[in-house]
Length: 321
Image (cartoon, rainbow, N blue to C red; front, side, top):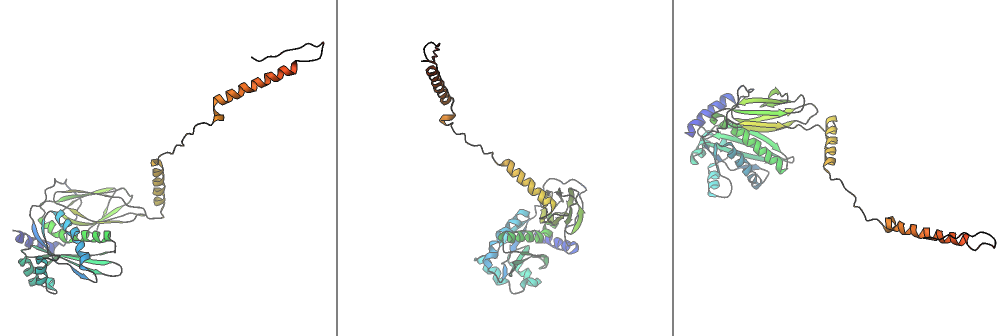
């Protein structure tokens, strides 16, 4: 039964807090995802100083992430429908802080897990808060918050990360086998932090992990840091290639810029100048005619100069053939 599995899961979460992180000691097995599925109720979103419509537009990102984990059957209680009206009626003010009220909502929808999303807008952007609650006990499983700018891309990123983080304990408990995370980075001297724990990367490192979501941060001198929340599923070999970008103004950044320019220049097609037809005075036949005319004129001149001299002097006649 899913309820029984969740009771075990809640106890594990309360004792451990998050999935353990260790270096890989054995090869990962082939994909064998957890078959146990739990019913998750996506509660009506709560907003402060912003319209509900904007937050509801981000819900497909949340549902896509939940679906990709392969353990949830999602029931969405948002929108303008009977299901949403029923959920809103049950959710009194501060209901989710009350264990009894939370359990009543879960029983009313036959839900194993409740997912609550809260958003508050400020001048700088939006603060999202997401939490999962165990339907059988009414207690909170995990809560996480993240800030996003006004950019749509950044808001989607925040929703993806939060969904992975609050769903991670459930995946950890219901997953039937461990997975592998292989991290590669070519930057010299790079280190990686996995759920806050530091590891020397040395270009590549493998981890054997319980299934769940892991906060990955990579750093190296003269490089911008890398940050992502990565999901490792049961039996999966998850490969993460990190390409750290040099900080602007550093020697490495200038070198990469020169290399990019050279590569771009190589790929540009060579422009060939269109060959124009020769003009008439550049052709062989024009200068042949000129030569013939010039030679004829010279012969005629010689003839007149040498003929018709005074009496008693020899005469030389020159002709041109």
